[in-house]
Image (cartoon, rainbow, N blue to C red; front, side, top):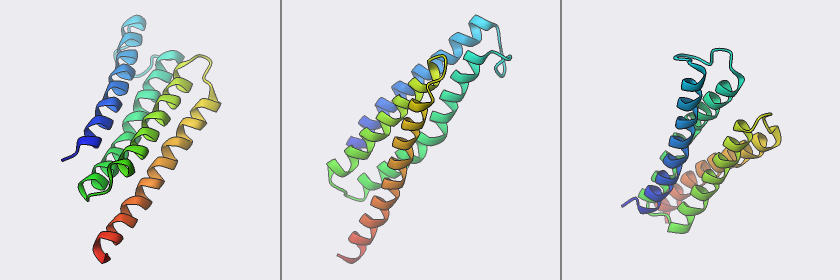
Length: 132
């Protein structure tokens, strides 16, 4: 069962839907059907949503693999929480005009740190399960 992954995925989906609604709202407000129409606020919202969609699936796959392979719940939950935190910080930094680059950087540090940690945890856990 993927109970921890399900909870993490649910929270991340809530964030993604919120980012998507922001894009839709700005498209309607600015009457832009495709692209950003040169609107800076819309461009930021599109990139915040796109960036989220680019990184989160890798995190969720690695979290699910870790849980499916029998890692303790806390070893799955902690990286999940840091991924959620990183994505929230990044989105906040992208969507507040003017963009807060320090929050963007911090959010990406959390995100990359979590992804790299998940790679190490998955490889380490796989080796542990194979040999011990």
